[in-house]
Length: 279
Length: 279
Image 1 (cartoon, chains in turn cyan, yellow):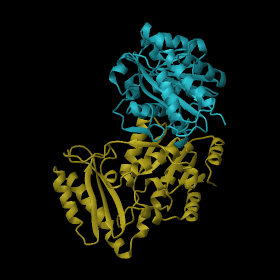
Image 2 (cartoon, one colour):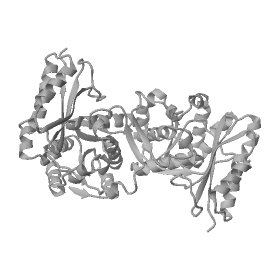
Image 3 (tube, chains in turn yellow, red):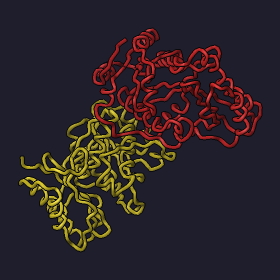
Image 4 (spheres, helix red, strand yellow):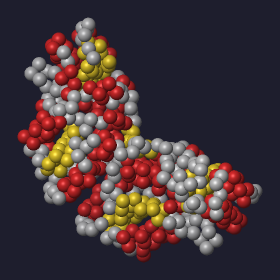
């Protein structure tokens, strides 16, 4: 496996490859969820490129950027063990040699959920992913469904800007108690980790209600929120949205995504599940 | 020469080519200025793709869009005669099958000149050019220096988003009396056409002042504006700007671009020249 930090070197290495290229963009601190993305890419393409770049422009909170975990050596070892061909880990100076003036903005699908609570976040995400797409020019790119709105934003960006890359969503990997894998889980205290499963349980509760014929999104959300009544949990949103537009639904007729963001102490976690209303 | 309207067919045709691809994006109504772009591309690359698409999203004024000249058959014949390999002329439905949600926004370089007087124009231009870049994936793309701010916007977009395409600026083609070639010249009345040369003459006057040691941008602009005092000319802007940032300069020390937009009757014309201050 090659480990590269320069765009020029990466492009040279890529131009020497003959075959399909899969791309897994990450911010490092890799866990089993990233592992599944890399495994899927290695299985489906000839060469897998993993980028590791903690992108400053997608952090609306500088403190969150500062404390985001950085574990490069472990990350690179995991990529190698899973069969990645190239790890690309540029510096911020390499990615942003001058103040960035061009941005990719995606409307509508960014309006609610994370877009509402993290102003500028998706502009930063869409812009850096577009930059990485132009640098790597892969055939397929892999994103986790845990970040469902991010996946929807990237799908919209790729479709609307005619990006010739297949966007692949990969199922969320969970701990045995249901907690979605996240680099931010490292920051939870022991006590916080014991209550973290409540988030997924509340999402499952709402999904069951919908699948068993529930028709009123408001009452289902209220029930799920009530199940999260705990002094250490502060819910930022819990919404039932259309999976493509990521906008709240008023009727339960087609598949929906139930999405949550909540603070456990000083750590913000997100999660989501799909639910299919009973017809 | 192939004439194609579908993105899928274009991609198939392009994938069959072996060699470098040059791209000339146009809105049709081709004139000698476009001709020079195509000739340059044909000379410098193996295959030249010319797109003809009157992009609705870059017209801030619907009336301007409606009356923009459409001359496809003549355009295609010119492309063929100059050695283009493919003309790509999609419909608006092909380019925008769903309401566009993803946009490329370029800050700073779009703030003044056209950006100030045509709100949304450069968002439309940057977005459609990015779409066309992703569809055609050329090695080089050719733009006229007559639209100097557009060229600066595309250069900034390509640099900031790591687009792997070389952006080539091509010198403005002028009629013998100095009028810059423009599809909009067709709309001028005979009387308007006789006064159109005044625009370039005013730009040349300002350039001479700068090249002969003029140091005060304000007084040079005022002199150029005074030279355009004519009842049929309404100046929208006449500015001396930095050629990269396209922002007005307060000192004349490095090369500058002198840019004008003016109405002759109901037709809006733009033009610009470079000037090198005396050191």
